[in-house]
Length: 414
Image (cartoon, rainbow, N blue to C red):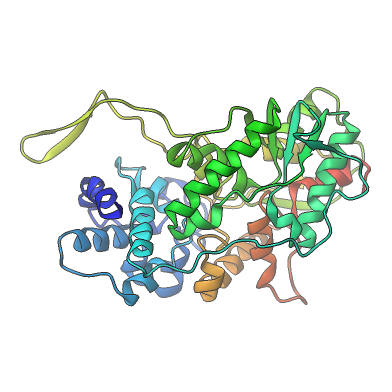
């Protein structure tokens, strides 16, 4: 099956012209020559094989029998953070599905027994984050909004604290919401690692749980969960019936309606890190029906034209609008932002398989935040927050906090 998926992407592989745009942000977007790179594993290893283009070349060589699956290939592919930057950068000049090729290659490695071992969060190691809050438990109770905080809240105290703060904000705004009695994982680890069957099964389980809750709206705490549910579930199973929003989108609507008042000044100079799966990776897929044709014996085209996912339809504005609504806050942008934001290095299972890549990516992103004069680095993804903190020197570290934490302080709940 995985070879068939790779074969269906052969023409995308053959479109690579070795322009190296998969390694850099597009030239018109460059603001500072120190921060122009796009690919964490290429930055660490300085070798083409680790780039989106390199992995497309290797996938094509595999299809043509010029290389075979082995540990060396698996080691290179496992260095990919699956951030999707190469995909949107490549689409600056051509329509090619770099991300799909990389995921299909990872899936083939798993099917060939060269993939990483399956990973799950396991049983919670912390008390439930909502203990003592008297929150509605769904589906036993009914509510308009379901708060989906992610299974990581049972393992990471910062994640649990942000979940509790988001619930307190919703309570203050008098939102009719509840939480799941038994909250499933989103399955993002399985997707990152190419474990197609495991991810498909998890998508089915999670969608069933969200639908069974009966809420009209699902609000996710983590950017990674928003991207997986909104963008990847439709490709492997289907989207939930409810409207799925990230916390930044939902909080912004409460602020604009006057239901959530941010009256306490937060006197900090901050910048914002766009999480890959909240930003460029959360754009929902567009359904297309047509055929691929060839002309002049070389050029291939789609009729009718196939929509191109440029990564611009993700959640970019809402977090920034929320930050600008906080009194006293001084917000500055980094150089690589929105669909061309640099990955924190925390995705793709890379912190475990290639910790040097995760470390260098995180430190480069923190350095970029310092370069624009930020005192605090704000993000909206728990994986990003954890990886951006993990590798810093405690003596000179830059604080990294979740967007929800800032809103919680500005609402006078801190």
